[in-house]
Amino acid sequence: MPVLAVTDATFEAEVLRSELPVLIDLYADWCEPCKQLSPVVAEISDELAGKLKVVKIDIEASPGIAQAFRVQSIPMLVVIAGGQVATAQQGVLPKEAILDMVRPHLPADAAEVKPNELAALIQQERAVPVDIRDASSYGRHRIPGAVNVPLEDLETRASELTSSDGRMRVLYDRSTDAARDAAQTLRKAGVEVAFLEGGFLHWEADGLEVERPS
Image 1: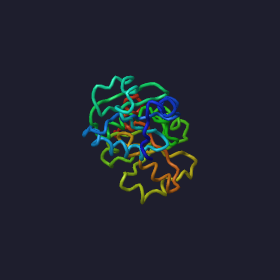
Image 2 (image 1 turned 45 degrees about the vertical axis):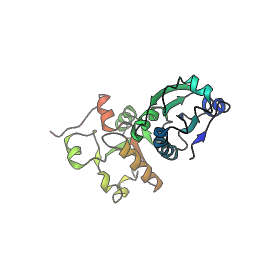
Image 3 (image 1 turned 90 degrees about the vertical axis):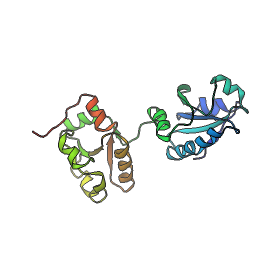
Image 4 (image 1 turned 135 degrees about the vertical axis):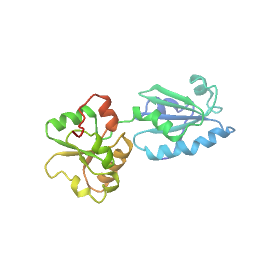
């Protein structure tokens, strides 16, 4: 999705009234670091289309916005959520750092399950956790009742993830990214799975039960 150019005149309509969270790239044509950051911002705009609105603002053409954000150096990235400034960073940031800025404000994925939700579903026998880590990690500690289907085997073992018993299959890794990406790929192929928000790290941090070999 193309990065939308916004000005003083269109800022309120395009940014403050946006139903989606907005990532603002504040730049100037003469700024070399801004040119380095621009393709990274464009890539994020493509990847998060429908979840995040990404705009760019030339601070020289829109001095009112520059003054409102008290811009002292560029590039500067600002995240707006619900019409309010959520966070801001200056400088050329790596892609992952920018994603870390915006992720807390993205609308929840329909396939995302929070740790406490998964714990309740397991107790109700309505979900099966699927550990996509390697066999060694699974053997050391895991979510109670989890089955192990390592990430590299998911495609060939996709038939095992079909919900023939009516229980949801919930993928989890150490953190979120691999399980989310795998779930999206499987869902596109017609395999209805979910993924654990925050992964095993979040599960442990929430103090939920962990199964270890005796």
